[in-house]
Amino acid sequence: MIVSRRLLTAVFGIAPLLASACLGDGTATTAPTAPVPITGFTAVTVNSSSVTYTFTSVTGDGSYLVERAEGATGAFVTDSTITAPIFAAPITVTRAGLKAATVYRYRVTSQRGTVNSAPSAETLVTTLALGNATADVANDITVNRTFYADTVYTLKGFIHVANGATLNIQPGTKIQGDYATLGSSLWVLRGAKIKAVGTADLPIVFTSSRAAGQRQPGDWGGLLLIGNASDNRSGTINVEGSGSAGSAFTSGTNYAVTYTGGTIDADNSGTLSYVRVEFAGFSTVPDQGFNAFTFAAVGSGTRVSYVEAIAGLNDSYKFFGGGFDLDHVVAFESADDMFDMTEGFSGRLQYLIGYNSVPLVGRTGAGFVSADVQGIESDGCTGTGCDLGFASTPYTIPLVANFTLIGCGSTICSGAGGGYGLMLRRGTGGLFVNGLLGRWARGGISLRDSLTYVRAGSTIVPDIAASDLLISNSYFVETPSVFQAVTTVGAAIGQYALDLPLNNLSLLPTTTTTASLLTLLPAAGATPANIAAFDFTPTTSASLSAGALASFTGRLAAKGGSVVTGTSYVGAVAPGGAKWWQGWSIYTRN
Figure 1 (tube, one colour):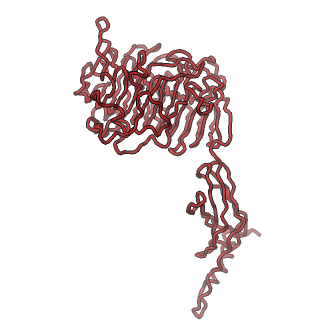
Figure 2 (cartoon, helix red, strand yellow):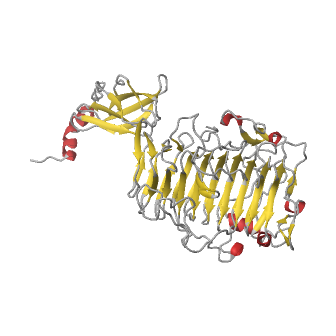
Figure 3 (tube, helix red, strand yellow):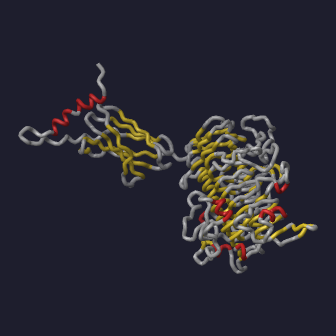
């Protein structure tokens, strides 16, 4: 005979109902008997964020309240409420979402109707530390995979996420590029995705396999995303630095990866949030190499927020074509450009911090180290496949708003051809607004080439309603001039300049220092100890609000939409606002 759980519940429920009923003469029965406290309650660690607790139920109990407390003295909070089985039986529950390397106390209370037992004896358990296990990754990832925070993963080669696979990375995970494998790197190829979503408390870190204190730029290759969006070069153009192992798709090797020819501008390569890339870069010849972050033809379905590059051998962030949104972006100690945009890149960026204090020295064998440090370098089209030269379409027209970019200063790293806050050339456009540029040795802006000037409408005051190139509402400090001096090459002008007051561009007096404008900034040439040496919030005495563009119109409004909007202040951080870089970003030179 088969008896249903519902029927058993009904049968066993008769006794309590009768016991609590009133007698015929109106006399009430006694209340339910208090349940007996649970004994033998245990908890064990599963990993850095999970524990499993076990106990045996008692027949007649209605439910169990499991509570946990953090540390030796923390207050108890509800962990879970468990419905009791009809008969006595073992109960095992695994709970996630805990802090790593943390002591927790657990207890359980039995409940029968409105009557509770005393809590059980407490049991203590300590979650594991992050990265308590290790794993090598030597082959391409061709099926969906997750990197877990309990494990430190070492990339032993050129690892490609391919075949439409998705790589999920848990918050707090550490991924190392193998120092012994020159150029070891992680690639997310066309059709594949990366979902690396950390938190402010648990950022995801890509770094060198060498110990802290020994690390150098170029210890490993970097993080590269390749999408299906448009690029303005025709033909088969491979990602810079790829192809040293030929064109055969041999797992884990540096085979050639093509990024041109895409037509899906809304392509989605995944999500990066609270991600750091440290000591990356791989450059075999000048201007041909991996960067800390490389984005090639990445489409607008991709989302990038709260990311940091530290001590990369090449650019901190390099964009080849495509276009997507980035916000809250940090670039510390770039060997080349902080942000390099080219080949029709049309992305939108807001809240950028860049800081350089010293020319970098890369690891032996990692390749070319640039001395051409710039804040933002933006080009139209250059190299093979530029069928219309600098006029090749789509034009490079990024929107960059609220940036604080600080160079090395004139006595530290002037650079043979660098040293500019903005280097705009080769037919580029771009909308640059609400920026603070300080300590740029050679000048605030180098505006080069006649077709770049055409993007500005061939006028010293670009039309905000129609121009592809706008530079406005920005301050320049500790730099010799806003624009590189206008020059002629033969009969042609090689350098151009815009009108300063009519574009709200201000060169601050020589008595003003970059440090005086910000709450805390190391002196030029100093060696900051750590991230605590920085506070990019404007000082109360700074006039970084007076020249801001608070309301976007024309091309700015059309381009920014609801994503990038005007602010009442210049620079990456609001006066009195959130110190958004804190808690997840770091500063270190090795």
